[in-house]
Length: 232
Image (cartoon, rainbow, N blue to C red; front, side, top):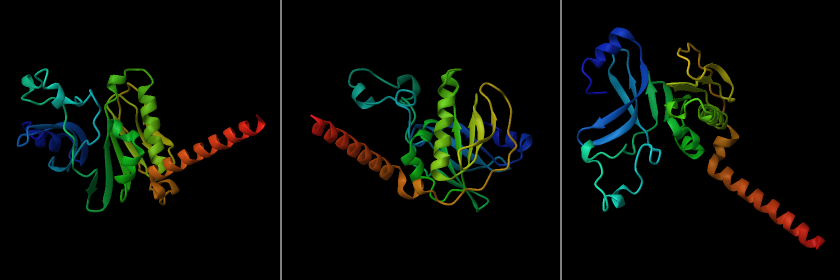
Protein backbone atom coordinates (compact mmCIF):
# COMPACT_ATOMS: atom_id res chain seq x y z
CA UNK A 1 0.00 0.00 0.00
CA UNK A 2 2.90 2.35 0.75
CA UNK A 3 3.94 2.11 -2.90
CA UNK A 4 0.55 2.92 -4.44
CA UNK A 5 0.68 6.27 -6.17
CA UNK A 6 -1.55 9.04 -4.82
CA UNK A 7 -2.96 6.76 -2.11
CA UNK A 8 -2.53 9.46 0.52
CA UNK A 9 -4.45 11.93 -1.64
CA UNK A 10 -7.23 9.38 -2.19
CA UNK A 11 -7.74 9.05 1.57
CA UNK A 12 -7.48 12.80 2.12
CA UNK A 13 -9.93 13.74 -0.65
CA UNK A 14 -12.49 10.98 -0.12
CA UNK A 15 -12.47 10.22 3.60
CA UNK A 16 -10.53 12.84 5.56
CA UNK A 17 -10.89 10.85 8.77
CA UNK A 18 -8.62 8.44 10.63
CA UNK A 19 -9.04 4.92 9.29
CA UNK A 20 -7.86 1.38 10.05
CA UNK A 21 -7.66 -0.93 7.06
CA UNK A 22 -6.18 -4.28 6.13
CA UNK A 23 -3.73 -4.74 3.26
CA UNK A 24 -0.74 -6.76 2.19
CA UNK A 25 2.56 -5.12 3.11
CA UNK A 26 5.77 -5.69 1.20
CA UNK A 27 9.07 -4.86 2.86
CA UNK A 28 11.62 -4.13 0.14
CA UNK A 29 14.58 -4.31 2.49
CA UNK A 30 13.86 -7.82 3.74
CA UNK A 31 11.91 -9.02 0.68
CA UNK A 32 9.10 -10.18 2.97
CA UNK A 33 5.36 -10.04 2.60
CA UNK A 34 3.05 -9.39 5.57
CA UNK A 35 -0.68 -9.57 6.20
CA UNK A 36 -1.08 -6.19 7.86
CA UNK A 37 -3.40 -3.61 9.38
CA UNK A 38 -2.67 0.08 8.89
CA UNK A 39 -3.73 3.04 10.98
CA UNK A 40 -3.89 6.18 8.84
CA UNK A 41 -4.60 9.67 10.15
CA UNK A 42 -7.07 12.12 8.57
CA UNK A 43 -4.37 13.25 6.12
CA UNK A 44 -3.90 9.73 4.80
CA UNK A 45 -0.48 9.35 6.45
CA UNK A 46 0.47 5.93 7.80
CA UNK A 47 1.04 6.34 11.54
CA UNK A 48 1.13 2.75 12.80
CA UNK A 49 1.23 -0.74 11.33
CA UNK A 50 0.44 -4.14 12.77
CA UNK A 51 1.68 -7.29 10.99
CA UNK A 52 -0.24 -10.51 11.61
CA UNK A 53 1.68 -12.89 13.87
CA UNK A 54 -0.37 -16.10 13.83
CA UNK A 55 -0.56 -17.23 10.22
CA UNK A 56 -2.84 -19.89 8.73
CA UNK A 57 -0.86 -23.00 7.67
CA UNK A 58 -1.08 -23.58 3.90
CA UNK A 59 -3.41 -20.59 3.58
CA UNK A 60 -0.81 -17.92 4.37
CA UNK A 61 2.43 -19.86 4.54
CA UNK A 62 3.79 -23.28 3.61
CA UNK A 63 4.90 -25.32 6.64
CA UNK A 64 8.33 -27.01 6.42
CA UNK A 65 9.16 -24.87 3.42
CA UNK A 66 12.93 -25.20 3.96
CA UNK A 67 12.56 -28.99 3.94
CA UNK A 68 10.41 -28.93 0.80
CA UNK A 69 13.03 -26.84 -1.00
CA UNK A 70 15.26 -29.93 -1.00
CA UNK A 71 12.84 -31.65 -3.38
CA UNK A 72 11.21 -28.80 -5.31
CA UNK A 73 11.96 -25.17 -6.08
CA UNK A 74 9.53 -22.77 -4.41
CA UNK A 75 8.91 -19.07 -4.83
CA UNK A 76 10.72 -18.70 -8.16
CA UNK A 77 7.88 -16.79 -9.82
CA UNK A 78 7.32 -14.64 -6.74
CA UNK A 79 10.80 -13.26 -6.20
CA UNK A 80 11.51 -16.00 -3.67
CA UNK A 81 8.41 -15.24 -1.58
CA UNK A 82 6.41 -18.36 -0.72
CA UNK A 83 3.88 -16.81 1.67
CA UNK A 84 3.39 -14.25 4.40
CA UNK A 85 6.02 -13.71 7.09
CA UNK A 86 5.33 -13.64 10.82
CA UNK A 87 4.98 -10.13 12.22
CA UNK A 88 6.88 -8.81 15.22
CA UNK A 89 5.10 -5.51 15.88
CA UNK A 90 2.86 -4.96 18.90
CA UNK A 91 -0.88 -5.51 18.51
CA UNK A 92 -1.62 -2.32 20.40
CA UNK A 93 -1.92 1.02 18.66
CA UNK A 94 -2.58 4.39 20.31
CA UNK A 95 -4.92 7.00 18.82
CA UNK A 96 -4.81 10.65 19.88
CA UNK A 97 -2.30 9.73 22.59
CA UNK A 98 -5.09 8.32 24.74
CA UNK A 99 -7.20 5.60 23.11
CA UNK A 100 -5.52 2.20 23.11
CA UNK A 101 -6.69 -0.41 20.62
CA UNK A 102 -5.63 -4.03 20.21
CA UNK A 103 -5.66 -5.20 16.58
CA UNK A 104 -6.22 -8.82 15.56
CA UNK A 105 -6.40 -10.16 12.03
CA UNK A 106 -8.63 -13.04 10.97
CA UNK A 107 -8.02 -16.30 12.80
CA UNK A 108 -5.89 -14.72 15.52
CA UNK A 109 -9.20 -14.14 17.29
CA UNK A 110 -9.63 -17.83 18.19
CA UNK A 111 -6.57 -18.03 20.45
CA UNK A 112 -7.48 -16.92 23.97
CA UNK A 113 -3.89 -16.98 25.23
CA UNK A 114 -2.75 -14.58 22.50
CA UNK A 115 -5.63 -12.22 23.22
CA UNK A 116 -4.65 -12.36 26.93
CA UNK A 117 -1.10 -11.29 26.16
CA UNK A 118 -2.01 -8.44 23.81
CA UNK A 119 -4.93 -6.64 25.47
CA UNK A 120 -3.35 -5.68 28.77
CA UNK A 121 -3.93 -1.91 28.50
CA UNK A 122 -6.49 -1.78 25.71
CA UNK A 123 -9.77 0.11 25.62
CA UNK A 124 -11.29 -2.09 22.94
CA UNK A 125 -10.47 -4.67 20.27
CA UNK A 126 -10.52 -4.20 16.51
CA UNK A 127 -10.90 -7.42 14.55
CA UNK A 128 -10.27 -7.35 10.79
CA UNK A 129 -11.06 -10.48 8.83
CA UNK A 130 -11.56 -11.88 5.35
CA UNK A 131 -14.22 -14.58 5.65
CA UNK A 132 -15.01 -14.65 1.94
CA UNK A 133 -13.39 -18.04 1.44
CA UNK A 134 -15.97 -19.58 3.83
CA UNK A 135 -18.67 -18.75 1.28
CA UNK A 136 -22.19 -18.90 2.69
CA UNK A 137 -21.53 -21.87 4.94
CA UNK A 138 -21.38 -21.66 8.73
CA UNK A 139 -17.75 -20.51 8.94
CA UNK A 140 -18.54 -16.77 9.34
CA UNK A 141 -21.09 -17.51 12.07
CA UNK A 142 -18.59 -19.68 13.95
CA UNK A 143 -15.88 -17.05 13.55
CA UNK A 144 -17.94 -14.23 15.07
CA UNK A 145 -18.90 -16.48 17.99
CA UNK A 146 -15.17 -16.84 18.72
CA UNK A 147 -14.56 -13.09 18.94
CA UNK A 148 -17.71 -12.69 21.07
CA UNK A 149 -16.13 -15.15 23.52
CA UNK A 150 -12.93 -13.08 23.57
CA UNK A 151 -14.98 -9.96 24.39
CA UNK A 152 -16.55 -11.74 27.38
CA UNK A 153 -13.19 -13.11 28.56
CA UNK A 154 -11.45 -9.73 28.47
CA UNK A 155 -14.41 -7.46 29.31
CA UNK A 156 -13.64 -5.42 26.20
CA UNK A 157 -15.91 -4.17 23.41
CA UNK A 158 -15.08 -5.32 19.89
CA UNK A 159 -15.33 -3.59 16.52
CA UNK A 160 -15.34 -6.30 13.86
CA UNK A 161 -14.94 -5.59 10.16
CA UNK A 162 -15.37 -8.45 7.70
CA UNK A 163 -15.23 -7.79 3.97
CA UNK A 164 -18.21 -10.05 3.22
CA UNK A 165 -19.75 -9.99 6.72
CA UNK A 166 -20.45 -10.50 9.48
CA UNK A 167 -19.33 -7.03 10.67
CA UNK A 168 -20.48 -6.01 14.13
CA UNK A 169 -20.18 -3.96 17.28
CA UNK A 170 -19.93 -6.32 20.26
CA UNK A 171 -20.17 -5.11 23.85
CA UNK A 172 -17.95 -6.34 26.74
CA UNK A 173 -20.59 -8.94 27.62
CA UNK A 174 -20.45 -10.53 24.16
CA UNK A 175 -23.76 -9.08 22.99
CA UNK A 176 -24.03 -7.97 19.36
CA UNK A 177 -25.34 -4.40 19.49
CA UNK A 178 -25.30 -3.74 15.74
CA UNK A 179 -24.25 -5.79 12.76
CA UNK A 180 -24.07 -6.06 8.99
CA UNK A 181 -25.21 -9.57 7.96
CA UNK A 182 -23.36 -11.92 5.66
CA UNK A 183 -23.01 -10.78 2.03
CA UNK A 184 -24.65 -7.40 2.68
CA UNK A 185 -22.91 -4.11 1.89
CA UNK A 186 -23.11 -1.27 4.39
CA UNK A 187 -21.53 0.56 7.27
CA UNK A 188 -22.09 0.98 10.99
CA UNK A 189 -22.19 4.35 12.76
CA UNK A 190 -21.89 3.40 16.41
CA UNK A 191 -20.91 4.61 19.84
CA UNK A 192 -18.40 2.21 21.35
CA UNK A 193 -19.32 1.14 24.89
CA UNK A 194 -16.77 1.40 27.68
CA UNK A 195 -14.78 -1.61 28.81
CA UNK A 196 -15.63 -3.17 32.14
CA UNK A 197 -13.36 -3.89 35.08
CA UNK A 198 -10.78 -6.63 34.72
CA UNK A 199 -12.61 -9.95 34.52
CA UNK A 200 -11.83 -12.99 36.62
CA UNK A 201 -10.85 -14.81 33.41
CA UNK A 202 -8.40 -12.12 32.31
CA UNK A 203 -6.83 -11.97 35.78
CA UNK A 204 -5.90 -15.67 35.73
CA UNK A 205 -5.41 -16.07 31.97
CA UNK A 206 -6.43 -18.86 29.61
CA UNK A 207 -3.47 -21.12 30.46
CA UNK A 208 -4.38 -21.24 34.14
CA UNK A 209 -8.06 -21.77 33.38
CA UNK A 210 -7.22 -24.58 30.96
CA UNK A 211 -5.02 -26.19 33.61
CA UNK A 212 -7.90 -25.94 36.10
CA UNK A 213 -10.28 -27.59 33.61
CA UNK A 214 -7.82 -30.42 33.01
CA UNK A 215 -7.50 -30.98 36.76
CA UNK A 216 -11.29 -31.00 37.20
CA UNK A 217 -11.70 -33.51 34.35
CA UNK A 218 -8.96 -35.68 35.85
CA UNK A 219 -10.63 -35.53 39.27
CA UNK A 220 -14.03 -36.36 37.75
CA UNK A 221 -12.53 -39.32 35.87
CA UNK A 222 -10.76 -40.55 39.01
CA UNK A 223 -13.96 -40.37 41.09
CA UNK A 224 -15.99 -42.18 38.42
CA UNK A 225 -13.29 -44.85 38.05
CA UNK A 226 -13.08 -45.30 41.83
CA UNK A 227 -16.86 -45.62 42.12
CA UNK A 228 -16.95 -48.26 39.37
CA UNK A 229 -14.10 -50.15 41.01
CA UNK A 230 -15.83 -50.13 44.40
CA UNK A 231 -19.02 -51.56 42.89
CA UNK A 232 -17.11 -54.37 41.23
